[in-house]
Amino acid sequence: MAGNQQLLYTMELCGHFLFHRRGGKRGQVKVLRILSERGELPQKEVQGILNIQSGSMSELVGKMEKNGLIERKRDDRDKRHYNLKITEKGMEETVRLKKQSAEQEEVIFEALSGKEQKELERMLNVLLDDWRAHYDESLFHHRQPDYVRQSNTMGKVDSADNVQAGKE
Image 1 (cartoon, rainbow, N blue to C red):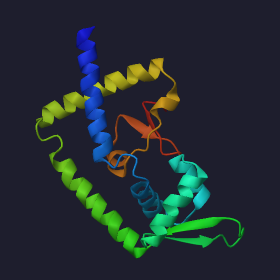
Image 2 (image 1 turned 120 degrees about the vertical axis):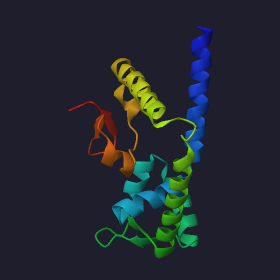
Image 3 (image 1 turned 90 degrees about the horizontal axis):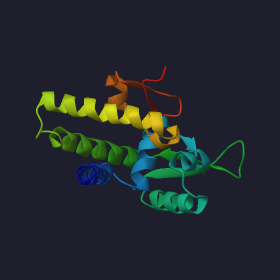
């Protein structure tokens, strides 16, 4: 049992590191990513994607608008609602953040050989498959980055941007 606890702790440390290295809970980065990928969207839709309260969303949007990263304008069809659109400055920031992330990803696994990386991926997929068989599927909904979506052979992405490995 002690071995399992140590392994679990090691996995938690890796998860914690990856979570924070990839932006953690930073809402502004997530809003920029969403708007850069999907274009202009209703504020309510972005709020739903982020799964945050309306007050938190309003605060977040206000800061981003003040910093010139996004524009907020009234919906032409329903003046009670707002649409969000990324600005040129917001796109530049998104490009900068993507470049920074790509540079970091070049070195994150360099301690492992290519063969070791593939073996680690294989073992992690064995764990994920077993966990999916024993736990609620909602625990596994996670946005899959474009670079994984393009090269993924282990699973597929459903219409809600969720990973569903091995489910046809």
